[in-house]
Image (cartoon, rainbow, N blue to C red; front, side, top):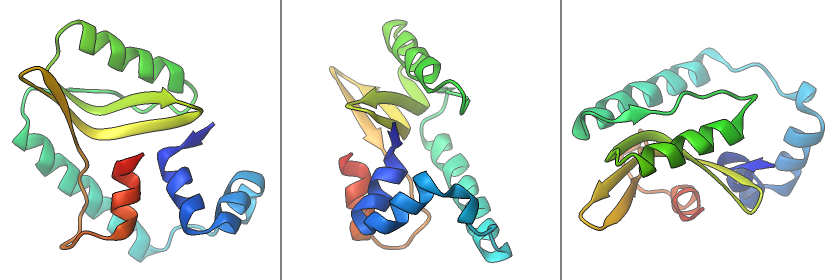
Length: 128
């Protein structure tokens, strides 16, 4: 199974995806700068949740992607209108969306990025 981010990684560089999947031990430890970027992304995500209050978050459990997708399905069936980290598995791709929001008779997906501009990789990410 591929995650959405792994799929996008493969679009950017097939060799990077291959190394990531086949030789994860070669991956370098995150630098202090990378860790800072991850933390900033988490802070921005928390701010985005404030725009859609009262949602239910799907906890990330790396050993149980299917359970995460089932929890999302259950919340939709229960009528929950806002789900953070809504999770789906489709065609072998594991997908988590930042915010899934019910509006009238449709569902909207909101992907949150800590950037000041739209980059082509974001379009690929949202397209999945």
